[in-house]
Length: 258
Image 1 (cartoon, one colour):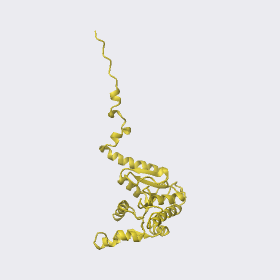
Image 2 (cartoon, rainbow, N blue to C red):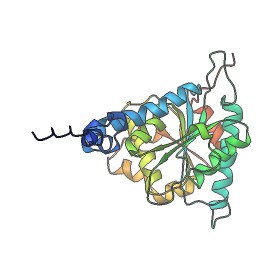
Image 3 (cartoon, helix red, strand yellow):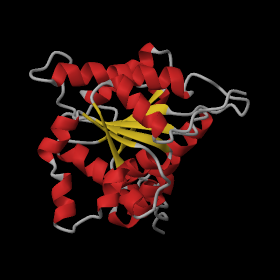
Image 4 (cartoon, rainbow, N blue to C red):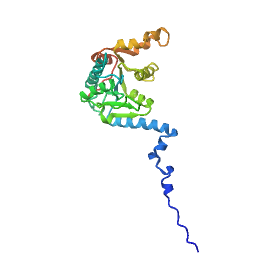
């Protein structure tokens, strides 16, 4: 009689993509059907860390990644004033303090990259305060600067989720000169304020001559695209101390020591 054939092994089953744990299956997690799950993960990871650090509120600083500390024109001035602002906000706003509730307020938050973002994070670093870098995956320019607190240095794939984290804890916004990305972030916040989708916060544009030179705000009113009252959403400043005063006069909420 012929010998019975041996039973097949289960190698094919063990190596099949369907056998992978879903949480460890990158092909599955990075597929189109899991986009909503990836949104949730990008929200939850940063949110959990910020809660663990006690970050209750932030002062968000936007500005160009192309600005250099010794750059041409007014770049050196913008860099130094963003650095000063990061230090001033961190020293006076409550980022270094832990209140009786063990929370931090007005923590500097930036896009985490070079240029103006680096300068603001650097000022906070020099003040001995934590600061946040919400980085985004881009083909160029975007790598984390060395002054963000390492535990608070995040990377996002989705612009929408990054902007949500930038907006949701913001007590104030200061926008230094920048290009398309800076405009995108500025008008996102302005739209949320104009439509009352976000609570009232002071919004300060740094270097009035730059902003009035690149955006005709009065022209928007003249053409009926916005109401004259919408311009009250904006303030201007030309140095870090004036920017801090504009934030305070605009209603920046300060931490109460516990």
